Image 1 (tube, one colour):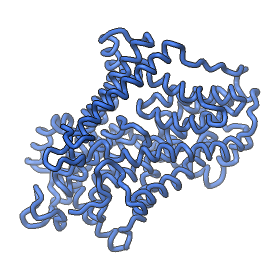
Image 2 (image 1 turned 135 degrees about the vertical axis):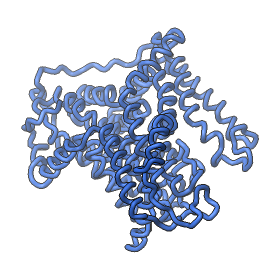
Image 3 (image 1 turned 90 degrees about the vertical axis):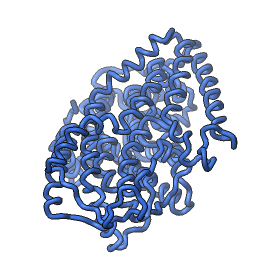
Image 4 (image 1 turned 180 degrees about the vertical axis):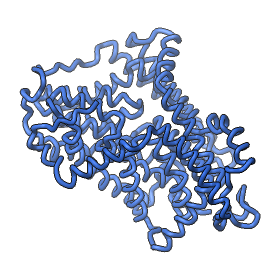
Length: 532
């Protein structure tokens, strides 16, 4: 997979030694000790059962922090750990195994959203749009557009890794620039800017579906919309792209120096990048008009006072059917323009092509569905046993006792998420483990689940590019080795670490200024603070 032979480049190699090299080696070693995420969730589920038995035996309990009238509030004002190591517990586990899985919110929302995105992806619409965006950019704007296109490519999962990163290397090479700088810029956008986007993508309903049950441990009935972080992430898109531009132009590319073609394992000619042909341009044009038409129709349901998808009682956008329908709108606004593009570009002719595109995407979801089955059991067990609530109450009390209940708590939270991400690279897997603990805990301190989720997304994104456990890291190394022989994992991580350092500082500052200094919402109609 990864080639660990050290590179001969003097601009990158020195950072592999010393404390930094030992740190990276330690991360890789610890990461390799972790089991597969599926196995991890299975083991965690078993651990919850055992721990619940122990804590239940000792009658561990905390004062119920929920309001008096909250559904499920214990009559005596206490929350006790419920043991699953009993006959009733065993019965609940066996009878709930299937419903835990089928009722796990991220499962349905992600699959439905992906069905729509798959049409736009397999018709070639998304690839052509990204290619046009980068190829059509003026030379002085190329770096910014590459990072921005990388961020936008996250709407279609792996598209950025398999299309944007190799394409960016070719573009930089064709312009006489260092191709590794192109790989670094695109990789930074695709991976370190993973959560930012102008559109609501598949990651939004996925995370919201995990945040919601975690929030309901403290506030039964609390709903988290897929648009919970849309405003902040849309603003972050351009901010992250600007940071990526600055790091590439002023740190990474100068350190790489002038590209020497002799560094490549084989002779490389400057590539010729083909622009979209007439059929592809016509397809994009018609898909664009179709998209605008759909947005116009959807707007009629929510913008006017008489909009049919406004809240039926308050007539507001907050908690309205519109926000609960976001996944359906993702499906429609990707699938229909995708098919229109395919018809004009000649890549799709009829309904069978659409069905084939959807089926291809579903065929790649086997591992995700397997992961969800075990993650759903873990989340359900955590909720049944009240362990998450007990930990949240005790953790919130500890935070308040040491005086860390102000906005500064999010700095520690973001750093913790970034460190955990080094060894547990899956965004959904990490959030499924941490959300049941930290969402209730920080809610009790006074912050809304939506703000907590936004902070998590920063920490989860910025360390992707330096995580040896990131699933695409081997692929990125393979792409880089086309331009520089014997490039190793240490060299790649050393090249990418400036992005992580700048992004985590800059993005955290943006979060603090946006949320706490300006008091602006992270999403549509969502609060910053939680009030019981």
